Length: 537
Ligand code: GLN
Image (cartoon, rainbow, N blue to C red; front, side):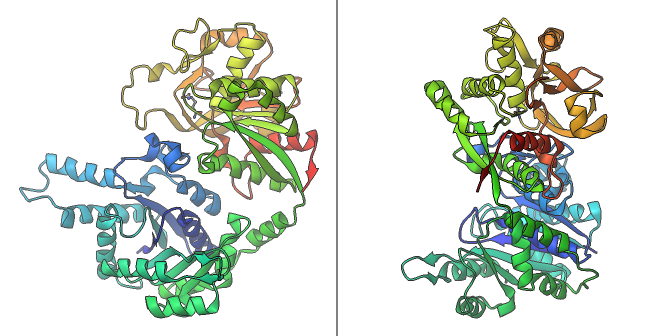
């Protein structure tokens, strides 16, 4: 039978509960326990695909084409696994399922209520997730903050689960904030006390309290939390700020949290292999060279919008003994002030990530033109791929009105057009070309050198593509489409022979990048960037 670890959050959102969850699961995995991980999002959206990146950070795409919360990215990166769509429960999904049953008459005349119908459905969905991989432990991260009205039915369902399955099968971890009053340097425990009180009011006593703090938790702070929140001193874990998120498992392991959880769940350690992880952190900490890379986007104020891109750049750079310094450019600024483009002379590489809609698109095109004309390594991802085609059509093929049909319906030269199967879709949620799709790479190309194989699979999320009518003409002018999919119909990678490194992909290679296994496309880009020049940190 699968045991459950429930991770809740207190005090405020954005505490890094996703990282903490992934790190705890990694620790158990490193002790030979088979683990799985899933997320409960208490919002009403059926999935996060349509949520504004400004509010929710990036949308993560799973292998099987689910648009997930960015915490899925932490899970996949830390655990080096591929998580599927069935590992997410949202309030929307739970209600959808209950309402469908109600319409089918499956409740046989009963009054359908939050308790027991919604809570039963939640328990059922969690047990279903546990059966997917039948791992010994399933960690369940509960989105939102304890006390939110939205999360009540979930917490109630979990309280029932603990009673039904027993303490040794359901463990509660509460992640809270311990702020420091700067003037006196004192760590304050009151918010934690309040949030635990809130949880206890719902009938849940946490077994372990993980405290997010600036500096390591002081002994007297730990003692105070232990006393007021009714947990052992060893059950209070300091999760203080670190330079690299990948250090989090190590600082928690130093406090024995892995063994502690195993003991509480009646599980035995079977091996111990954090060495590779530890070596990796030590290597990263010793890095003293960096490269400057520009990321030109439209949500650059909220860094979480591009979190996977940043991580993928780091993984690649770290593997070559470098760190990356990312210079963020708001694409619209280039449109308003062309002088601003000169600032790109400080960088050794330019990346245009995925995106949607008109705002900022002309600025991105200007940045791409800069990279192409000045022989600066370029990596374009999805929108950054499509706009590279537009830029090329306008400035090399001299079709100055060329555009993507997404940005200009009436362009006489729609080099990027809507995918034929997308034309008649009216519903927006979950309907893009999504998830892993096999590609074929042409031998003898740069792309082939990057991957060293012909067949690869990469994750997608788009509605538009290179218009098949223009492929031949574009290639005549010098762009090479070196990877294709769907029997050669869809363009997947473009390259510009003769340029130091001008590569763009219709797919999102960042979703397959792992700290110890950088994505090949990012690796080749950063390698070119390093060759272009570097600075000492
Ligand atoms: N807006 C473009 C499309 O829908 C690109 C999408 C993206 O960058 N993820 O095809």
